[in-house]
Length: 502
Image (cartoon, rainbow, N blue to C red):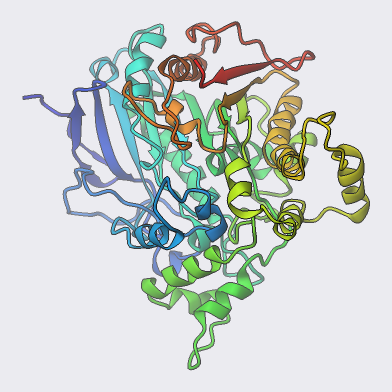
């Protein structure tokens, strides 16, 4: 029987479990923030203030309250459930949901733990995706495969510590409006507090706070980029050294009130009109959860009701604008990439007719002037369907337009902001749809299917994992990948390709 490490963490007692497969200790559900209830609902997070006398062994998973746009869930009918109603029923009845969700998990290779007093290990911090409305620290996958491979990639043979975090989602994390009592971008502030927790406490586990790499996909990648541009790069040093942004997307909107009016309308009843954050805080959690689900579910095609907003402090402007203006943490190193056909499933599920496609364009081009729209439609993506512009149909035209606007340009913005010194990649698939690469990041050496229901190719998964891990431990990302050399983006616009065809 193995003897497990045992110690208090941030005023609570946490036990661990030893995983023989992957050889790591897991420290689960460590609180990095006080439960955001009562006056802390819709407010900035704070460090834990209370002491729990309950032994926490991390076995009971905690998930922040979930919601999601109906149009987005439709894309996964057949993958996550037989119908939209079945998917929503399973999602919203999840017993793991709780407001006391500001917790994180720490996975420590046994080699790191056994030598923690000798040398400090590199750290990966995972920020999950889900459109800023869905997901949790454990839903992306089991990091056992990553942790196991990290011992071979690490020049010291110890491996990499893996941390995964929860942050508030939907209305609870991204409510915005004219009420001065609401804290905008609370979910991004949660991420920041978690990263600060890592800086303060990762040494206890044998980690080096100077060797922290933030990795995230989709909204998680967008969150990672938001941390790069946080406060315009002017609030102390960044609490991380590197970023891996997979399919980074930010739905940052200048519309301050966002879904505010919809939230108030859904929260009000015939006998009780809700018009302020104070009144929202007074509602029971079952009512708030239903409001969150209704407003998120009814969002417009390819748009989300709740997302980051320009708040003047944490996000003083659009991330792209901040990157272009040099207002970001420029000493951070970056890997950034996207998938070949990010929007494919979403468009097929929602926009086969002309009118929904037009609505989709209006959503992801929100705030664009008429002159700019004319240039986009007539010059950049003209209705020429002979393949000379890379598309052969109206659907292909819309896919090209949306993929570049929401994903590809973000990688280019990052590369140019960092003087073309980033490492860029594209995950080809096939089909290379959004989220398909997550199974490769979290590949665990078995017969596994990705989100497109395609079998994961082990050699490609190992190449991706080894590249990311090599980057995290300070090596060239192509040194351990078994792929061709991976130069920086540079003047040649070099991009590494990862293909699921092997």
